[in-house]
Length: 213
Image (tube, rainbow, N blue to C red; front, side, top):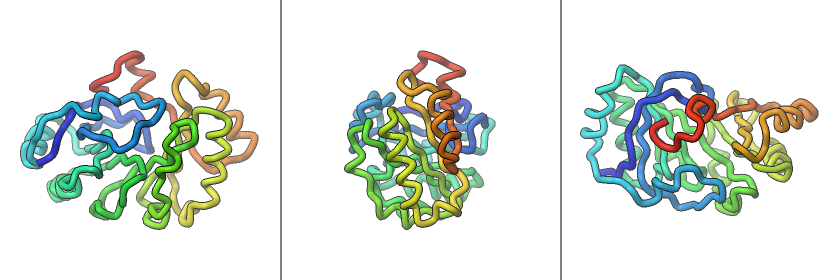
């Protein structure tokens, strides 16, 4: 059984899949408390469902792309089983993780979108850097940039990614309302950073809407 906060159908707002229709399965619970978290409602709220019940809900939508997110989905023991069930049913599965848990618990067919927490999150000490060795060319890495200090931290981290030259999708995302896209774009252009400027498309489409997008 899994504790589910919400299941909804929307436009993927981040990652290399941004702009595509996607079904989101948001699981309850997170082991981190990022200073700028926008999904704190998922810390505790939720109800239990089996993987089969979740699959039945997903089948209501005309979509073959699913993202399992949170919270932190890898806190729940049955998350890998849910991902495997969806993959076996022919879905493309993204799993967004905060990078503090072993990502190799997931089926290798998943596309793992891993955050590396920067200092402004106040959780950078909880990055599990052994996950860097587990990344593959299928996976994606995301840095939320909330200050110049965060940017410099993220830029330095690129040199520590053993496979970073193989990982095509490294995202620098400006913290909404704190760092402007123009500001971050300027830093990236000045330094020639080999990463993608990634805006949160769902916040552009539905400003002020916190849930279900």
